[in-house]
Image 1 (tube, rainbow over the protein chains, first blue to last red):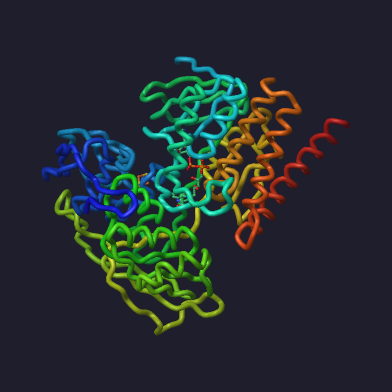
Image 2 (image 1 turned 120 degrees about the vertical axis):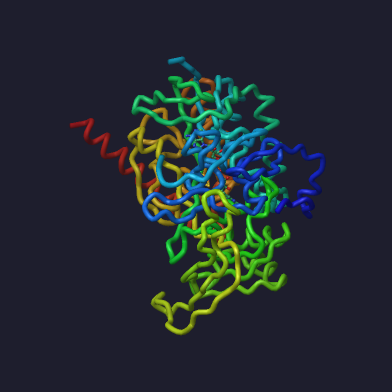
Length: 99
Length: 386
Ligand SMILES: Cc1cc2nc3c(=O)[nH]c(=O)nc-3n(C[C@H](O)[C@H](O)[C@H](O)COP(=O)(O)OP(=O)(O)OC[C@H]3O[C@@H](n4cnc5c(N)ncnc54)[C@H](O)[C@@H]3O)c2cc1C
Ligand code: FES
């Protein structure tokens, strides 16, 4: 959910949006934001499956330090989606285990 | 491999690195400030609360306003800033591997300041790897930097200052906080923060912990709806020996668990450089030895901010300033007397930041760290004399 109004940070206006794809699902994202933010905003929080038990996992640190948020981005696996910005037409896929 | 050189290289453009770079540059040194993020400021831009302390520590000013002022000063001083660039390795001779955007470079500097910050701790429990279990700092980043709410109903684990402040910030952003749970028998953070969230109707369970998080099991399919993750959180009371009390469990509906269970210094580069460390739990684990100039056991390698022991943004800025002054002095840009004057001013401010019920433990920890450095230096001197 986008926080459009905030008591201290004020109102968000004039957002430029782009479209990215989670699998085949189109998702509207704000230009320049990290992929992880766009996915969470769209209610998606399963980013990958763990290597041994294939359990779902999403973000943990959101600042590029834990690698929990890795996905396959435009064909490149192990991409930290919390520190990688969206680009119009970008394709992100769930990553299963190590690649 | 392209060569990159500077008199002073500062790794990390958080509050510590910004102040180090500013001080060294204003004394006249050529300074290169590097950060892997696309924006400088480190964790400071997500700190929207007003700072504590006295006027000279910018009390009453919000973190992001302090960050803006700092960035302006750094830009005007002529520091060279390299963003989107990662220092991935360092040798004991201080030569570094730098990824400048995608290009691999060799970075050399006479003086190096490492100000890489800290990372959030994790704690295991049943279901702790489910999507929806995130760091409290991650929630802060999502809300204040990306303006995205990470969850609608949150259980906060940990009632230290980070847990309390982020709980309040979640409420401000429009989320519900179902509860704050704290394993210790009392709240760890400031009473004013606890009072604020209690007034908003959030229960704080001390002597309790999270025992289980569970919920959607479909995992979202192979790129399906992306559901899956936390839906329920089980909480349990702890006895005086911190053991769960059977039968005391209760369950709350929540889609998100925020862990506010401490930070650990990001010391990887400092280990790699061959610096000596001391284990100081109050500072978040192993921390590099350093002297009153913030210089480590590797000559010309300085540290500042959370990497030297997790404290707060105000101490990080002062430590950064100290490292910057010391590096400039060592390069001959400041006379001994001018440097001594600046360092004494900073030391006085650092001392006053390490006072009071919360500061005393940090002051004791810092004294222990400095004493370990002094021991190391006298051993080295003895060895040299033999
Ligand atoms: C998520 C989070 C939230 C926090 N919130 C609060 C709060 O609300 N209130 C509070 O008082 N304290 C908070 N803290 C504590 C906080 O760490 C300090 O307040 C302060 O920001 C520490 O400053 P610093 O300069 O040491 O580190 P940071 O501000 O973390 O800056 C370190 C910088 O170094 C960069 N870096 C690290 N390694 C490399 C590398 N190898 N190459 C290039 N760049 C690198 C990072 O990208 C980062 O920008 C928080 C910490 C975290 C991690
Ligand atoms: S969530 Fe930790 S690296 Fe992205």
